[in-house]
Structures are given as structure tokens and as C-alpha cells.
Length: 337
Image (tube, rainbow, N blue to C red; front, top):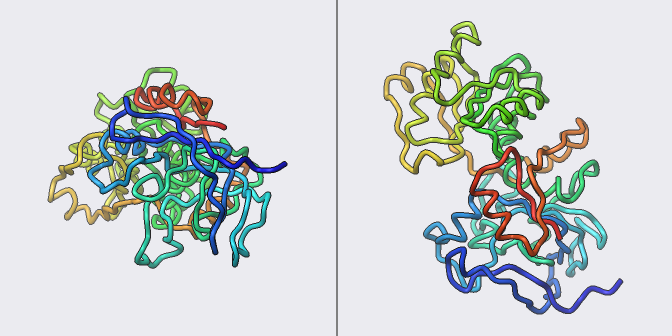
């Protein structure tokens, strides 16, 4: 079947949700070392809301196409491409150009300021993609580049997670639920703190959480009690702000806190004594590199891990999908084409 000569995309001629519009553009041919991907699904992240609102203070060229995570099928390849062939299923990397442990000049964020994924076709460097898991649909696979890899990078790549350890997880969004699943995959306990309703508590327990604690309670003391006074080995800090100080009260001596989200504000607040006397490692997690994403894909296929999708929306329903994302969801919001 011949590819169309134009692509459809969501774009912003200027920042603000009210300015989101659909448009057509010429279908670009891939240059050397590039692949043209027919997009099957785009997974939305909280970052997408911020990018649509004001670009998060970055210099963004207009019109701007949002969306950083996609899964699709290679439609055409440029000269010199050997990693993929036409028909291969792929997911993109969140950081274009970050291949392994060393950071390289020219690395760019997809979905701003790099190319956005909310389009019927996207043109990216072949090095900015990995093979999609064979066991997942394109909608499921689209959740891996940011949310899945963030949790994997915090726990498996940098955290050296081991069986029997305790992982404290804040919330029930995409990263949080991947953290829960990855913890269970490694034989670790997953303790979830959430302000959600009883239905979300039950869903987290059904997914494998060992305990679900209420955010408005004394959860640091409860985590200590559940770990026989020791504290959690790992914390996925998805709220930050003043919440970090309470997480430090719940982590063990020499434990690790991964700073991921900023729902509690951009400024961290923590006790000097809790951090220093507790010998806590506090690390920032900015998703991860391509090699770690390849590791995650292998783990997904080997263990039949299924991402949690809260809802799927058609391409034309992007505004409704963003509304759902802003309200909060148990799992990921996906836009399908």
C-alpha cells in the first residue's frame, strides 16, 4: 500500500491549549540515517501539558508539534540505515542521541525542542529508536519511552534493585505503576502512597502492591512499621517539593531516593540532618538512555509485563485526552491513530 503524500499532525502556532489545531504537511522523505515512522499510538505525559501551556521556558520553533512518546511502524528508511527495515515496529527514545552511559553533545528532547510525535508520520534519526516489544500492542509499547524507562532507570539501571527490598512509590500515574510492576518483577515489595479513592487503592493492590497507604496519614511512620523499623530501600519521589522531607523520614539508612516528578513544586524542601545522618543517596532521574530502553524491552518480553492503560482516545480527541491527563488517571493515557 502506497504511503500518502501528506501527514496529519497536531500543532501549536502559539502556546496555549486553546491554540491546538490539526494541520496537514508534506510527507518528508528520510535523509541519510533517518527513518520515517507511521505512528500507531502516542502516550501522553504530564510534561506534554506543560509544553502545550508555555514550552517550559524553552526556545521552541513554531508551529510546534507536542508529544514525546510514540510507537509505530517503519514506513521508509534513508541511506545508511542498517538497524531497521521497512515494516519493523519501533518506539522512539525520549532523549534523541543519548545512546548509553555517556552524554553526547547534540542530545535533544523529543516533543520539544526536538520533533513532536503527535502526527500520523514522524521523521527521526534511526539512532533515536529501538525495536518495540514483540509481546505488546503499539498502544502498550508507546508507554515505554518516558514512563516505563523512568521507573526502570531509577530502580534497575541505577538502583540495582534486589529481591526482598522495599520500594516506596508515590501516586498511581504512569511512572508510579511501572515502578510497582518493576519492583514486583524483581521480587521486591511495593508500598504505594496515594491520595486516590478506594477504587485506586484496590487497583494498586490487584496490580501487586504489598500495601497502599493514604497520603493524608502518617505514612512515613507506617512505612517504618511495615519494614520493622528499617525504612524503604528505594523511594520513587513523584511529588517532590515538601514531600521530599517526609520521604527522607521513610527511607532506610543508606537508602536511595529518586527525584522524578514535581507535582509538589519545583523547589525541593528537605532536612539536612535526615539526608546527611541517614547517608541517603538522592538522585535526579531524567528518563534514561537508549541502551536502558533496550534492556527494558527485553524485560517486558521475557516477563510478559503489560503496561496499565487508563484510557485510549482517537487522534481527533486529543483535547479530551489532555483533559483526562490533567484530571489524573490510574495508568497511562494513549492517543491512537
